[in-house]
Length: 437
Image (cartoon, rainbow, N blue to C red; front, side, top):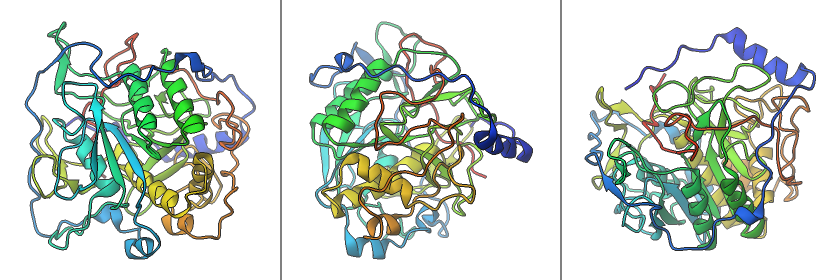
């Protein structure tokens, strides 16, 4: 397990937040304008080129000790939420490393495979199954950890889009499959399959530019044509395959895609079980809300129980990362869409932000509008037309309202931190898990 980068000094964080509100307008780069002509065609999912498995599938260790509990769910009163809705009628697409069949995932639909010749219901990496469990795992009275999914009656659409265990057949030295082009294809597929919510827990992250216009077109199509809510991870700092550094100034130096398409996605940062920002969570003007992404418990991709760690080169490591915070919000979105079916995707996005526990100073680039509050989001106290929390006009704020859906938002140039600077913008999820606090 790679070491987490040194903790950002308090003064840096204060400077970043102060600059977000006080800095004069500065040079800013927008993501590529959305060009609908670049929308991927509606073709059956398949790998763009032949691939082969290069590594053995992940075998997560069993939970050690009887005192382990699903603390990531502690802030939520699930019994109260489920008296209102359990997510019935919602189709949630998980675009990830696939979803393995599990006895606690009864409504699992094959969505397709861009990695190999499966149908999406295979998960050699284990990551997608963990994400899926957080969204929709059924409760189990025999589970001593008390783990359950947020929206257990939602239907999951499994789409395998990336894997570290496979590689292109034409290049034996290359490890990893999945890029922003296949991600764009997967988003189109999910939207066409009727997904009311789409979860993307893979992040392309770097310091230079890349052409991800097909992804922008797919996100626009999903939100404004198919009325899907797209929830994405903010990105992690601190290791091989992660974002190359933290954003600590008003003008970001590191960007995450698809997060920078902020007008079309809900970007989720990570906090601890106590609601404090996770030091590995990437800051940025695209951050919308936050949820717990540390010391996660979820479904075992290689068994019928649950796990709280994944294998790494240096041994088992606790599961932590923004990609585990994103599905918490995805589950809440599924509940909201089930309870308020007449709300549009953009109204749901605004509702999630408006009802979050706002930071004292208002929106900031670390946790956005604050930690998601599912009880508030599911009550009738919030007007359906509520808009998201206003953000400062100067960087790092994107200066937009999701209700207005302009074609582009303020951000910076993007490329990939997962496999160097590749022209094809490879979007691999290399060891998402980061050390817990």
